[in-house]
Length: 103
Image (tube, rainbow, N blue to C red; front, side, top):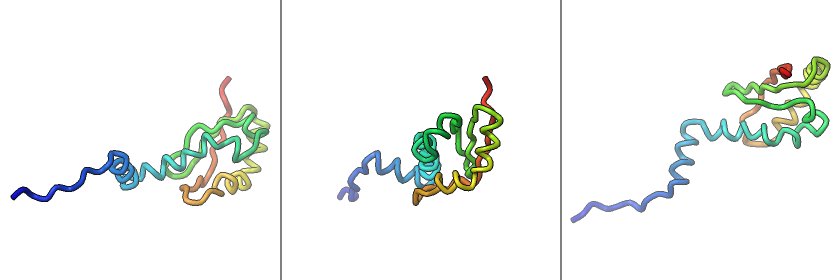
């Protein structure tokens, strides 16, 4: 008598489980902020500030065109964090590090 065989699992289901178990799925969802940046912060800010990466501890690194904009955006940080974290189910951005863009 042969042992009972399980039905093969779809590769997408297996991969989704691995990504969830390792915490990578949450990081990928958190990084979704980068392509949504202009929608979340508005065209004016998106024109002068470009998100670069999000770390595991929730730090978003953003390149800014000028010192004046860096100062202005740092003052707006609480408001920007609320906008970035409005989507439910995504790991929150806890802080923003503003970096002057090198020319």
